[in-house]
Length: 265
Image (tube, rainbow, N blue to C red; front, side):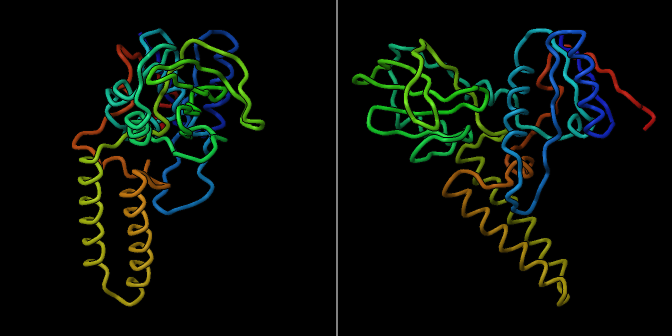
């Protein structure tokens, strides 16, 4: 059974509750609220995203645990949990792999292809070598092929780019909270454009037109990035556009027992 402590308190109160519980019982996790943004900003926290993904992975496991979060996180929309299971896979020495097919899967699950892997959520391919930095891992991994089979898997240092320790297998978990297929992108683009057309038609004053023009420019840039890169900076805030049915946080846990702090509030 998964225990869930939800609180309608400020973030620092939830953090304090998490720290207090951690002192007394094991397997306690803090699930931070997603930063909702409909305009492009540079300050969306990568650390926050990695922390949320780490807890999502724990929620999908069957072990008993306590999740501390805020009521806003409990009420938010999420992708169907089966998508995380579908796009989570393990690579083991000796496995036959196709880096071309794998790269498509990684892009769909939120990874960014880069020349050199320096941050979480990135991967690169150089001939028969793939570097990848899963968001749930403390270190990146270098996968080397011999023919079409994995010859070795090693951790490496992002600063020196030198291999460190040899390991037998690595688990690859999605790098974003939204996983898209071509069909999802087509559906989402159409729905976003439809809502934009409604906004344009309902705001026809001169002052409104200036605001709407800025919105049009942002949406146009987002949709262009979506078609080219399968993502854009604030895509997590647009989850309901891409799926016929979204999930809530309880869909990620079986037999959840919920305790709400300050229920009257």
